[in-house]
Length: 561
Image (cartoon, rainbow, N blue to C red; front, side, top):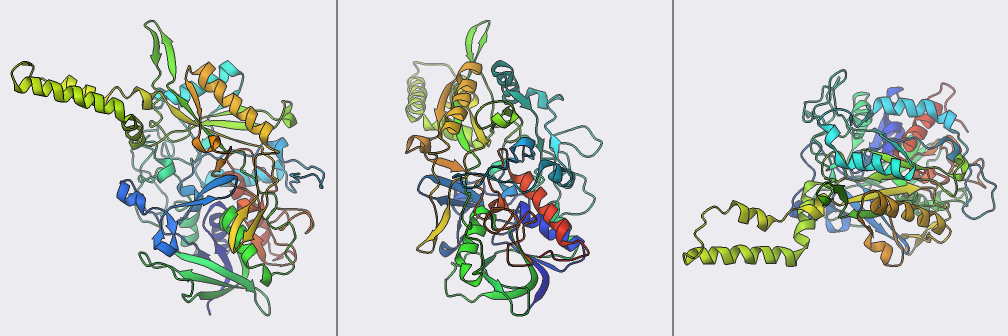
């Protein structure tokens, strides 16, 4: 049996940081990732490739997207070497200082953060440097022509909201050079894919995987560095069980998937052992694994599964936005497919910041160019009418009635003006919803009882603000996402909680250093440890916490009981 100083399960923001920091400290590390690696150029773009780009091992599908559906909420996560960084929108914002709340226990949905912003700031700094965070270079051409960024700034001014260009895990320029789209990125070391990357091409494809390597995803920084430091990175290795090992440490068993071959429940597992186990399979993955292996850990806190929330995620749409010009009201081409997915943020303060209610962020959302074609062709009746007009003109020409030989204008009219897609963009909201949900197992499957009931005032305020941006600032039509109309369901890409931090086992599953109460050397480092919403994009906070945990693990005094 292979033995390691540490086995890390998952390669997202917690797992990648943990694997690198421990390998850097000279420990033998094995990282197990259920998904596959995605070098530049390997992300799906065609309908055929996208069809197979989902995660369902039983059907022989080992793709990027994994969709979970619960009673009141749906969730989207990713599967691949680099975890959520492969499909997230690059934002590296810190949790607001006063949002590290310490509420009294006993109230449903209460939060108690055993760490502070001051304690995390050095780790935020370290992660930002490692991920080469850069702000969108909005002041320079051609980036200054990004209409959606201009629109967000104008909305902030009109509605009295703070506008900012957040740090992004995107390379717009090489160190010391001016930003230029599509330039080769200069790297001090070859990345683990051994491929050349290029600076951001402003194509809006961040959320479906960047085929140019412009996103500073975890495989290009932490995982590449971990591999150089000697870490053993194993892909298509899905962990199924783990348990304490007689004499200390842990046994970890995983199934090695074979691309194209459906996974079978009775297939043999590979078992390895480690002095330390770091569970970083994500909010749903880690909580599910803890629940399904609970019999091996009878001392696990009763709070396992608690404090689940959506991080206040809400997706809406600003449609047919317009501007008043000298020629009257005209469509405003926000061009959501120009630039990275997110370029700027608007911040609504919290009652804790001197505002009112529970605070949130609203961010512009881009999309790939092919989505514009889908939007335009979705108007089938209009497209059919334009095609009929072109066919009629061709018929007249065939009989010599129409002698015009230049068809350029006719073909342009067939394509349509493109005003609908150009003047419409999604808006992404997130903030401090109430973490009163519970994750549990029902018939061996993960279940959630979270609903918006206690968070309804928050979502109402967030929706009203997004409506004001759309209608008052941009002259557009506000549209909620379809699932909101179907029973006020939420789609989250930032699900948090399930194995929360706490001061003791009565309050949480892990302590402030991520170590599971009662099980020395067993850590959890991912979104599941949050005792409540981060309020902004949680990736940076997850990574900073993992970096803090790694400091404690690698201290000379060893494992902390």
